[in-house]
Each structure stands twice: as C-alpha cells, then as structure tokens.
Length: 320
Image (cartoon, rainbow, N blue to C red):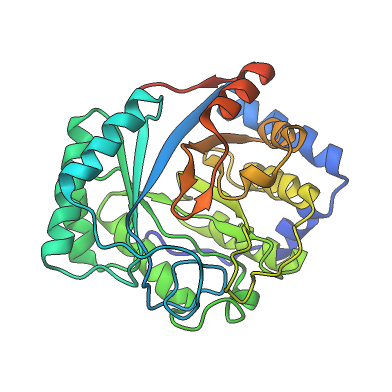
C-alpha cells in the first residue's frame, strides 16, 4: 500500500552507515546532498500549537501528555482568525511554510476539524505552504484536508520499532504507518521523522532510518529532533545525546533519502553552532524558525539569521 513500508527495512545497511567514521560519513553525505539539492538554500518553516496540552497519549517525552504533571500550559483550540494572524507574522518573518499542531490523539469530525480546514484554506490564501499535525486520521479526513489545500501532514514514527513500546503504549507503530498510508492515498505530502535521545541505542536509530527509507514513496520532509527533557515526564532527567550522534543520523538520513528535505527540528537551542554547521554540510536543509516549537524553546530568529549568514546559507523565501 502506498505510504507504508513496502520493502523490508534494511536495518543492517542503515546501521553500517551510522557506524562509519564520522568525517567519512559526512563527506559522502555532502556529496550526495549536492547532487540533489542546492547546498546554499535552507527551507524555513514556523510551527504553532493551535491546541495545547491535555493529550490522552502517554508519550514519555511529551510535555502535553495528560498522564504527566509538566510545566506546559493547557489551552483550547485557537480561533481561526488568531491562527491566520500568526501565519501572517510568520510570513513577514521569512517562513515559507506554516505548520499547525494540535495535541489530539486523533482527528474527530466536527467543529474543531472544520476550524482546522478553514485554517488550512486561510494559510494557503496567504501564499504559504500549509502543514498540520493532528494525530491519527482516516482516509476520509485525509481527503478533506487535501481538498482544503494541505501541502504536508506531519506524523512522526518517533523511534525504531524495537524501542517503541518503551516510549508510548497508547498507539502502535502500525497505527502510525496506517495514518501515513491515509495521507499518501489522499495525495498529501508526508513529513515524517523521529526523536533522538529517547534512551535508544544506535541500532534502534538505524531501525527508524530504515523504516523511513522503506516508505514508498519516501517522505518529502524528514524532521530529525533531539530530546528536550521536560520536567515531569519520564524522560525529564535524560542525559543529552552526544552531538556526533545527531550529525551521524542527519548524514545517514541524507544518504538513505537523497531527495527528501532533512530538517533540524527540536533541540537546536541546545546545539552549538559548529554542530549545526556539520549537520548542514551533511545534508540538513530545513529548519523551524520562531521562538518556540509547540512547547519547547527554539533559537532566537536573530541567532538563526546570524548563523546562516556566517555559513553562507540562504533562507528560502516565499512558498514554492
């Protein structure tokens, strides 16, 4: 079925990439990146939480889970006009894609979903690409999003299949793949990646990469997040992931998915400039801009502009 892993994920091949000498791996990934992308251009998206907190899922990393007592606020779904005002500000700040996230387990038909459809139409009318992440959905809901003009649906696999049950129990790995299949069947592009630093080993990271690479077609956008430990969650006391593992994962993702956009996502605030530079060299070509990613911090826009300028990189302006 389109949108699911139609070939057996080659975990051993992905692991072999992750275990190569780091600079050799980065060199090869940089070569492949330049074959398929303009290495000077970085696509910029902005993400807004349109409904915050109270999620019934028990993802052990998440500040918005109702299962944990965290500092994250709870807020009902925003009004359409409020969201579109934020989208206008995002466009003025240089974003070309506006992403909207709701802390739901799944999409439910009704007033909330109708409002999201209106948000998508409004974002498109502003000349921006539109992306949403709303949890699980079915074929009919995916079609309605496509008819509203949605460009991307984000639905991450989070981690490798062998480590998944240690991270979440309220949704299965195959549930996630079924949602991706519905998105693909509706003709919407897929944004799908994972989170590093959830206590997984390198083989579990290889499983994640292999599963993503086996999707047919491969995701157009692959966000690579690193855990931002949140007080009150089971992973709140986690040790930081070595930055070299992030660079390895970005490089391996570029080699396995040469045409995908590889996005440096959550965790960039804790990442030093040199590590980000190596990630861009290894094939990362998309970032989130703005002060916040849902409920976690993001680098100051001025800091991002300074870094891109120092590296000779250009932020993509205007929807394509």
